[in-house]
Length: 128
Image (cartoon, rainbow, N blue to C red; front, side, top):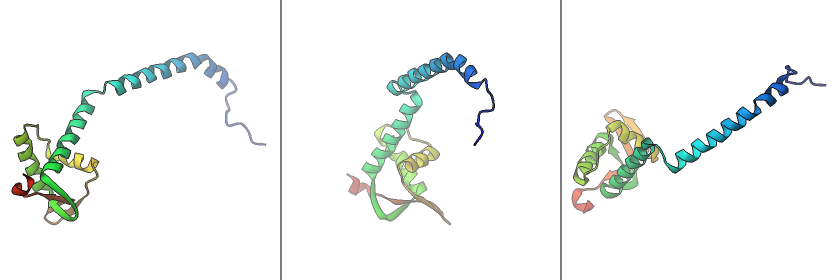
């Protein structure tokens, strides 16, 4: 017969003495989660704003096509121009890249730099 994995015979007694504290901790954690869900911290709001901004840029200034790719630098420069035109804060290049990655945009490194796959900048006359 297999020995019990519990080698401390007083473990259950000690756990029973701490049960009230554990229950209080769980209740406090539940209240904290509820408060965070109903009123997210500013960072989450900023995160949503960054995604919204990049999403709007992609829909207004870019075309999606699996057979194309665009230079990361060109895409970011166009994003900055667009942000200035629409009056929204431009993200840093690193943050812009992180948001694109979160959105599932694939990139590849080449000898000449990073390229985003499946995104093509629209010509300005075609974007109007």
